Amino acid sequence: MFLTIVVFIAVLSLLVFVHELGHFWVAKRFGLIPEEFGFGYPPRAVGYYKNKEGKWQKVFGNKPVNDASDTVYSINWVPIGGFVKLGEDDVAEAGANHFNNKPIWQRAAILFAGVFMNFLLAAFLFAVGYMIGLPQAISDLNPSAEISNKRIQIMEVMSGSPAEQAEFKAGDAILSINNEAMISLDQMEKYVDERKGQKLNYKIERAGVEIEKEATPEVRQETGKGGIGVAIIESGIVRYPFFVAIWEGFKTAVEMTLAILFAFYVLLKGIFTGTGVSADLAGPVGIAVLTGQVAKMGFVYILQFTAILSINLAIINALPFPALDGGRLLFLLIESIKGSPVKKELEGTIHYVGFILLMILVVFVTYRDVAKYGGKFFSSLLSLFN
Image (cartoon, rainbow, N blue to C red; front, side, top):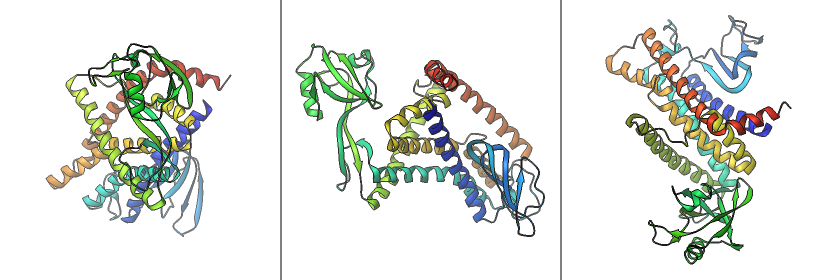
């Protein structure tokens, strides 16, 4: 459990810090002087800044800094993520370097930079993963791919199938059936088809642990052959040379972004059409549990999981919803169309309402997480203090 908490905090901190770094870096490129750039969340532990004489100074706690000539760089007591104070919520000041006095395109670039940095982080992590060796499907690969540890993996379990009744799960790797090793899709499909109606013993690997399941194949409507109701692929550890890994990392990030965008479309469609929210939607507790499971599988799996979370964070922040970067970009679009900014008081109220709605959603999803994972999560958490 301790490993789960450490990895969860490290992953979350990396994602948020890189996002805020994107805002900060582009703001500095445009001559803006952010008030503060911090690692973690306040209260401030210590901060460093240059005073008006150009000398580095130190400040402890939340003491106001009135003599800074540049950004205050701080380390804060809540060691999760980071933040940057750009001054976008302030009333415009006379200085040309104030955020609200920058051209619309520069403000838009500053706001979009966080989203873009999360995408770049994902591409970088995928690239590093490919240099080390990344688990994935082994069909239609680049010719320079090196493949090891080939296996048959479950991608989907059909509803009402023998596999669902036996509690097979997506991601399970099928090692053997009746003690006969399964090394290819054709071999497994033929073996199962020839044993329709017979109870078979499956040895599978789940999160690094080997377990056994029993299931009886039946004639499946989707194939007309004997099966237990799973969609399977051949997977393996895929490794590329350095420069190919960089390209494949970027390509994978783009493909994953498109896949997650489609998943968000299905999610939002379900919300607005009243068909409900997928049971697979996870909040903070769910992500923490998943992080713990991934951490047990190894470093490269953490890289892959972090990359996927980074893309999720980028997409969520890009949504044109109040309190998110996409919502602020929407207000800049309105400003460009009408020729003047929306009143700060009105915009602030809308962002505040948006934030409240987001918190309600977080509470709702967390409640579902607790109902789903609560016993396992909190019993493990309490064990740290026993």
